[in-house]
Image (cartoon, rainbow, N blue to C red; front, top):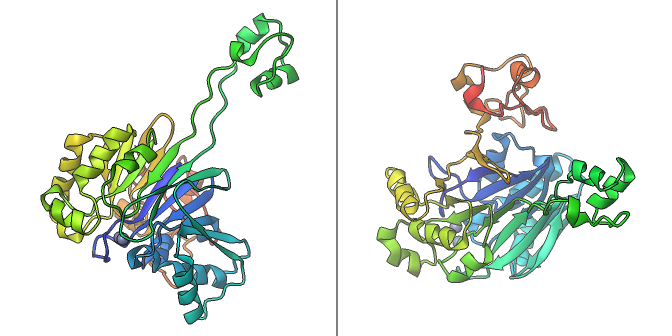
Amino acid sequence: MEILFLGTGASVPSRHRSTSCIALRSESDIILMDCGEGSQRQLMISPFSFMKIRAVLITHAHGDHILGLPGLLQTMGLLGRKEPLAVYGPEGFAAPLKAIMDATEGETEYPVEVVEVGHGSEFSVCRMRITVFGTDHGLPSVGFIVSEPDVPGKLNREKALSLGIKDGPDMARLKRGETVGGVRPEQVVGPVRKGVRVAYTGDTRSVPAIAEAVKGADALIHESTYSSSEEPLAESHLHSTALQAAETARKAGVRCLFLTHISNRYDDCRDAVLEEAKAAFPETVLAEDFGYYEITRRSVRAIGSQRSDQLEHVGVGYDADYLPLFGYEDSVAVCHEHRHGRHRGVVGDYGIGFLHDLRYAG
Ligand SMILES: [Zn+2]
Ligand SMILES: [Zn+2]
């Protein structure tokens, strides 16, 4: 699963951070988690395609998590989306969303299904399974765990052959869990490997129930509005500190922690905030806008910043395939070298090219 941070700021946009929005991608399907003001502009200058968004998950109805959604839904309509889109959020979020859509004549031609969910709800989006957990933020609020499917155990072919199983359909039956000719699957098939799981808290006070809910996730994306020097503020505003997020990660036994929803008061001392968390949980990353990570069962890989308008900074520049998109002419480029060369690249629905790893480009 890939994580692309599109907005990592708290409450208001700043020069360095847009408001909350995180994209998860599994194969080519994208789930958007929260959609603060400015999120569609962030998407446009990212490598992810609008049209591959299969669902939007909203943690709560504060403006910095939801105000980008009406615009995004309307833009998708203008771009000719036909495929239905599901939007999941906590109790009570459907009415204000509908009110904004109605007030701005934002009716879409494609179906938008708005679903209210609560602690314990489960649903699927393409191959991903989503579990909902409760959070504590002074209004109906939830967090989400997004899981890829479990991977079947590996078949030990040599051992199966030695037990008299022939190559072909019998091997496949064993792998599916059937007993074949007296050979039981557990004799020749390894244990099921858990699919990758990514958990996101949205805004919340630090409460023990969160560690319980996200136990064993591969990655935890936790809000981190304050540093521990301002813990009383975090408590009174129903937010968390970096240290509290790290303690939750440690208790939950996750593999890595991403801090997001960072107040702009820490623009000049982000390292101190990060160090505070790392002291309690070393595998911590302080997320930045356009930070892009790949989470597998084996590793967490930073792929580097994914702003396509940074192409020039790595000496590639725009070439003949440059395509303007929605007037944002300075932000979209396609690179021949990249598409046809040794680096992996993708051309999106609207001819959006991107560099998969800017560090190696050019
Ligand atoms: Zn917020
Ligand atoms: Zn909030």
